[in-house]
Amino acid sequence: MKTRLKDTIKSATDQIDVLAKMYPMKALAIDLRGADDPRAESTLRAELNGQPGYKLGGSTFVAIMDLATKHPDHRVREMALAALDTIEAHFGRVAYQVPVIEHQGDPLPVLAHVARISKEFSEAVNAASDAMADGRVDAHEAVLMRAEAVELRDAIIRMIAMLDHLPVACALRRAK
Image 1 (cartoon, rainbow, N blue to C red):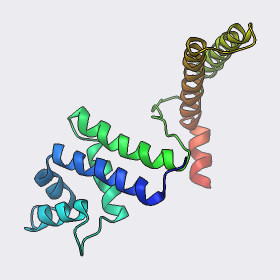
Image 2: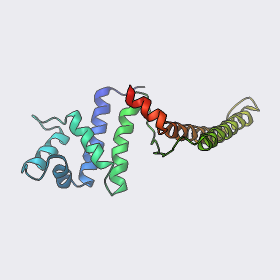
Image 3: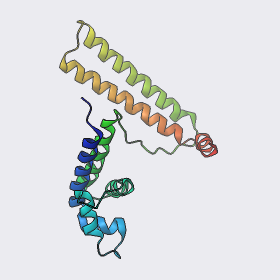
Image 4: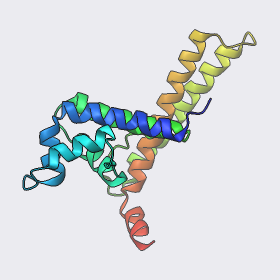
């Protein structure tokens, strides 16, 4: 059953509220709005709690997530990503961490990525074949198949990231 958008927003906002308390709130308010605003902390707290007359805007929500993903405490970073996951789940989407790969166009790294994808694809097909040999897939086999599929996905994401950093690809993206 799909969650209502209102419930999704409430859940993601609750996660941002927890994140703000771990940040902690006063430091987050200063990072968001500057030290010059004496009401920054109380206003942010009111927005996060949905008090009458206060609303947490989308730009503030995203700015909090952005600041939190750069926070030194991994729990704060993870909470920001959990809020993002909540929103993505509502829309049936998933985001992945895309690695930054520097590449100068040498064909050998491209071939290495193609080889890795081929290897991972072969392993995913083998896991699926083994699992379906008896005509059904049990829970353990599903876990193994999923692990192989994740490795294949990760190899593809790494290749896309590498291709996106080719000088030609960068020039084409800038031209659009």
